[in-house]
Amino acid sequence: MLPFLISKIISMFVLMIIVFVIGYACIALEHPLHINKSATALLLGTVMWVLGITYLPEAHDTLVEQLGEVAEILFFLMGAMTIVELVDVHEGFRIITDKISTTKKTTLLWIISIITFFMSAVLDNLTTSIVMIALLRKLIGDKNDRWFFAGIVILAANAGGAWSPIGDVTTIMLWIAGKVSAVHIIAATFLASTVSIIVPILILSFTLKGNVSRPEKAVENAHRFSISNGERNFVFFLGVGALLFVPVFKTITHLPPYLGMLGGLGVLWIVTGFMHKRRPEKDSNFLSVNNILTRIDTPSILFFLGILMAVNALQTCGQLAALSASLDKIPMAEPGKYYLITTIIGVLSSIVDNVPLVAGAMGMYDFPMDHYFWEFLAYTAGTGGSILIIGSAAGVAVMGMEKIDFIWYLKKISWLALVGYLAGCAMYILEQSLFTK
View 1 (cartoon, rainbow, N blue to C red):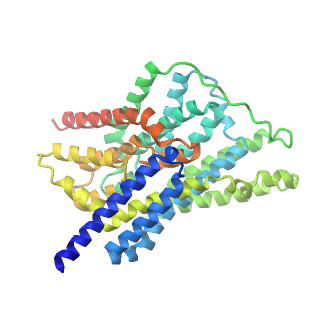
View 2 (view 1 turned 90 degrees about the horizontal axis):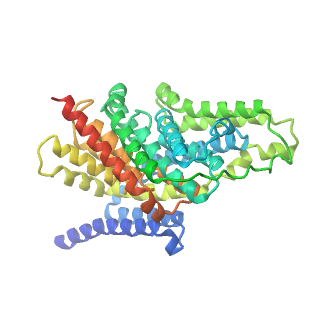
View 3 (view 1 turned 180 degrees about the vertical axis):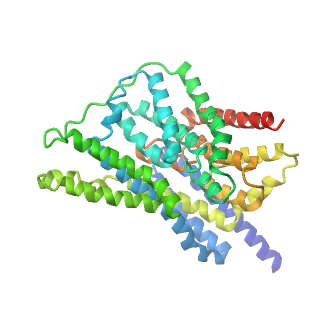
């Protein structure tokens, strides 16, 4: 009887992995299968938890906790998307787009990458990606060109977030847990993160030719009402201020970032409501948050929900912990062993969420603050997710907003992300070898 029960438990453990791989493949093959990725993700998340509770009945107690963690990301995403849409509908991004006159692809590539890289360090990679996609829609008319630049936005946003203590969820985790200090993580990973985006841009600078076509200016609003320069600038700076306030809010209150994001949205909602109360009802309704909420990409939010719940099921039932433990058994001396482990974790973070992988590493190792392992982990977990489009929050957001195909990204962008990622790894290891001599 006991051998039967053991084999049943092991088979359920393995079955969850198989189901996750099948679901992941269906998401990747969304277009050939004609099955929406959001529907697949929701079904995958449900099935994974059904199997998880069958395998580990006590996992039921953690389901609400896991849903709460996922909900934090979803509400953050929804708040950020709404603020960006509100600025966009008031034509606020013209402050930036009107100053970018070039249509040359290589020049625009450098401009977009630099803006994204540094903005991501100040905001975070998810918020920055949402803002930059809104900008790209004003700058690039052709869908294929915009997809390509959106892919580079993912690389730059994740690279920029990796060297900042507030730029990525994983760096925030390491910073709050006392694994890294703010000043040290910036000094230790900035060069590696910079190399990870500079290398792909340099490659493209020699291969990317031609100009982008600007989108036709929308005339929908012009026939009905006009937005003054004062209103446009005011909403832009208020919206950007709300986004910038989020990390400040977290630092001051120690509350989750989504509360700061929702608070900022509340302020914008009230202020813009007063701004437009004298306009005709039809115009004020068009500019209101009520209308903007109907334009939010709900399928992308549901995709987030499904895929994160599926990964959390693997985390709760021990598959990710088993993966971390198996990595620790690599027969190699220090520091090479830990360089290899963190490099592998970065690659794996493009397949499963980097948060549980980093959480698992934090639970396994007890290195002191600012140890090279934590620094390198911040870099690899932050930038490795760029290798696949659903390997990071920024990638999933961009995928949903622009409806980018998984296979297209795999063919066009993944190899650039991998080359940049490995170049950054090499740079960090080189820095360490020179620094420790």
